[in-house]
Image (cartoon, rainbow, N blue to C red; front, side):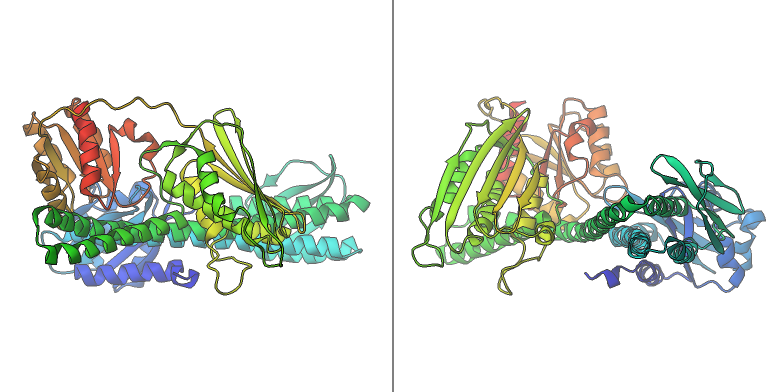
Length: 636
């Protein structure tokens, strides 16, 4: 999805239009939280007859918004009484509003984005429309959140570009007074002030602000050198961003006023600002893509759970070779689809390994580097020699398959950097609770610009046939393991890529699996997924009770003291999987609780035990995975 399609105004308009259509509403209003997350402001209102209504809906603090929504906890639906339309709510009567419903707009990990409200003139909202509104809001929340983040990033980028322009103006000119005139004009425009005055002389070193003026000191080395004064504040007043920007400009002026050292200092700050700007653009763009990729992966994993589960059940019960062969192809294709989703999650850096196991990095390095020992280079007579400098380090905690992929990508890049042959040096080391593995080549090396962009998706120096995903996928895998990856390189001197990962904790050997069927409560709001998982569990001899939401699940927990396991989906309307887990543990402490998710990495996975969760299962779920986790439940 391009950044243009994440324009916050367009995304808000799509949500409001969708709500009007899905809820058959006469009017819809959407409030979004500000950058600091504390205040709700009207983003869009549609369908209201009176221009004054939009003004009345705007500038409502979050604490008062629920008050005029008939004092109900969101989500809420109400048919109005005459007493509901007096005082501050008189606009409801003026608009002829008969009924309204309001729902929170929040992401799957409960990040609050805003509030959506729908209104009707002469009829109530039917039963079930509140759940429909929740669905509309929940579906749009990740995109809205990504659009908000992108809008914030663009604002930061604009401020960074302004600082770059100030730095260039101060660094390029020999006439400091002339440069200050340009800097003053730019600063006033950037913060929305009517005037900016810059004075170079001794002054106080504290920032002062009032309704009329903002005064920021200019400091040269450790002495006061002048002041930057902004007058004529914008309607919103002096925001923290305006104070921060004015302070940054004043700091740049102090550097420029520092004589002969000022020019060199300004150049260093210019480079730093460029790096910060590029890093912010990259980080915010990838985070926006991560939100979108995570949502797509969630839906695909639900579908693949149904396909894989149903196919495996049929394969177990059928012995007709004419049926088994095509079903085997379907099963393989579904598992390949799951691998594509896994790569999508790694690319977006949202996937966390479900259950880390001890992995020997030295064995993986030997395995991935072995095919290149003695390999011929492009130049006749040239070869690649592999040299190992291993430190007999402890295993790391992770998934061997994905770590092998990461190291393979790193080694392949190193080999490609040595077309004329050279040495590939593999090194391991340990420090504290971490283990590092380094891959060093004696190849062409990288410039600073290439090294900076090497981990960006789709960046490549290898021509149009390359994907540019090698190091970015490797970086995503390493980060998902709680590690880090660094690159040291210079043109003509080779490159060293170092991966650092946490050591594996010693794991006790599992005991024998005791016999016996389990009594399981399965919770999932999607009926097809719920039925497929239930059939898979029953095929292994277990008794399965089902629930379609958190409230129904807790009612079953109350009346079923003999439950052995609660297996719940993570993302559901109303109570989430974390909520169900915590409540089930509180009522039945002896019951095991597992969470099933298609998001790859719930943000709170490391703290799952705190929610009462004993294990997490990633979708698509297979019979083998279910057999393993249920065996662990029976061992308890």
